[in-house]
Amino acid sequence: MNYGRIYNFSAGPATMPEPVLEEIRDEMMNYRGSGMCVMEMSHRSKVYQQIIDEAEQDLRDLMGIPDNYKVLFIQGGATLQFAMIPMNLMKNGVACYYETGAWSKKAIAEAKKYGEVVVLGSSKDRNYSYIPAENTADIPDNADYVYICENETIHGTTWQKLPDTKGKVLVSDQSSMFLSKPCNVSDYGLIYAGVQKNVGPAGMVVVIIREDLIRDDLPATVPTYMDYKIHADNGSMYNTPNCWAIYCCGKVFKYLKKIGGLEAMDKINQEKAKVMYDFLDSSKLFKGTVDKEVRSLMNIPFVTGDKDLDAKVVAYTKECGFENLKGHKSVGGLRASTYNAMPKEGVEALVECLKKFEAENA
Image 1 (cartoon, helix red, strand yellow):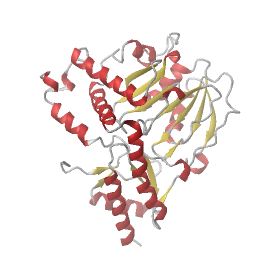
Image 2: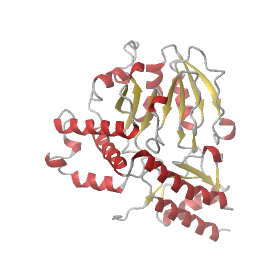
Image 3: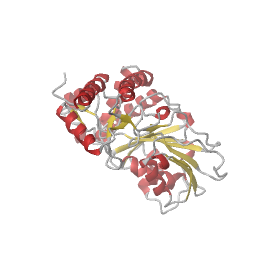
């Protein structure tokens, strides 16, 4: 049942699977006989402990997370990790970053507050429309880690192959592609993802960190909440966690397992992105802004080449029942975010709408 819902192409907070929302609705007033909503219950209760334990286990099952990695549910979203990562991992005070868009650029600026940052490559010269060639030559021997934003939400590029880090720890911001395809966690030292794009409601980040990277020798100046060890030692409950987000994410984890896991999700994502990209490649009015070999399956930016016409497209699609197709304020244009929960039918309907617009504005 649709409940009069529209197709929401927002980059985040984003659409969630309808079966998950229906289940949340049914448990809203009385979670499994507890007599209260999850939003009301103590995070120290046995009922809630089961919720967070199941959420972690289901995520481990989905991703095949090895036992020597900790799963942490931390408040503050992905932006907090821009500082938390260098605070915790910059043991030698040196880190390497690839600059591939707005979010990696912000991460670089934050990391510079805590140590030396070596930018191994940048695609700024072409407005972040490509992924720069991997560069091992400039990785210092004392580098603590190499950082990538694996999928740039604003500019719509994605790493198709992980860079060679010369044996250094790989850190990845997976916020806008988390759980969209299989992931070999052992390739990374740390993965993090703000959950509001592909998993649940805003206000939380999932951090998957290899245990040997969790330190007990951090400077006394590091705030308690910014210490990964504090979260790991307390099972993500040092303070009151984002109980509601963890509960909702847990529902999504179970939903993904039910439909066949990340392999099945990847197949669906490939198919629906192809619908959009095939249209853009054949259109005379609309054009994708990213090099084909690094196109994101999650965030698809495109333009008409005319700002006024782009604005007209946004208004037109809104009248047709499609929301949030305006590009990010920093780049303009248009963008369709086709996260896990966006059905293929939604992308097909959007393409038909854009075809109609093109015919009327030829």
